[in-house]
Structure formats: structure tokens, C-alpha cells
Figure 1 (spheres, one colour):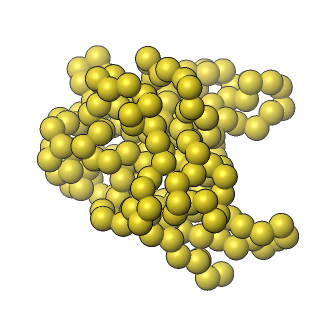
Figure 2 (cartoon, helix red, strand yellow; figure 1 turned 60 degrees about the vertical axis):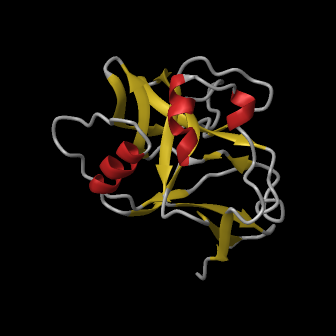
Figure 3 (cartoon, rainbow, N blue to C red; figure 1 turned 90 degrees about the vertical axis):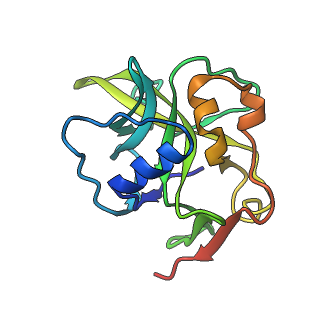
Length: 195
């Protein structure tokens, strides 16, 4: 289960790459503060791209749907198999993500990156939920069975979309089963993070 990822993507990178894949991205009136972040953890606020009334928009939301039951943890990962997602789809930009192995603290930390690109987008969902403090917009990462690169480290894999599939995920033009699948062998690089 992915509980830590990073985003070192600059404003110009968003503009250029989304334009290359045919998505005209709308930003807030003021350019957002996009400091490089090695670690984004549950309940942190982070960038996502979602379909808005005037097209795809860049917003920053809380990671983790409010818990389904009182005192439960936030829902940071959501299983994708056999499900339809007809609303609330989003892209979650990332430079890398982490998984942890071992039974005792400190666990071994592994950094995963996409083999052929500096950054990528997870498939995700966003929605408005309720916290004790009031309504909140939040997102979660979709997961699938692990591909060959992930299997030695975890029994689930966050869905990393190819750039050619970003628009299809946002605009619902292809079935979920075609998009929400594990990465092929060799498409993720992995390295041990030295503490």
C-alpha cells in the first residue's frame, strides 16, 4: 500500500508535458507554490489534476478520503479491480513513490521511479467528504495487483498511467480495465533508500 510519494515537478513541466499529450491544463489565477517534495504522506495537501467545468484543472487537495467509520484511518489507497469509476477521476502527479519491507522498525525503504520518464501520474479519485472540522475535498490513489517489478516488495501496486492514457482516464473514453493495470516488467526502476 503506497503511503509515501514525492513530487519534484516544476510549473513549466506541468504546462509543457500536459500540452504535449493534448491536455490544456487550467491553473489557479496565481501560480501555485510548487516546492520540490521528497515525501508526501497521508493527510498532506498535494497537487492533482481533475476535470472541472471548463476543462482539466490543477488543484491541491488533501491525500486521504475521510474514514468510513469513526476513528478509522484516512482512505489513502483504493482497490480498482472490478469497479467502475464514472465520476471523480483524477491524475496525481509524482516523481517517485516508496514501499517498505521488513517486520521491524526501521523498515527498509525502496524508491520506485518510472523507467522512461522523469515523472508520471497515478490514477486516482477525488471527492468531497466530511471531517469533524467540516467538509473537505480529498483524493486517494487507485491500486491493482502487483506487476513483476513490484511483486518482490508488496502485494499491491499503485496504478501508474502512461502519458498517452492521461486524457482517457480523465474523460472516461476507455474502460477502466484497459487503464487500471500493473506495469510491465522493466517499466519501474527500484533502488534502496539509504538512511
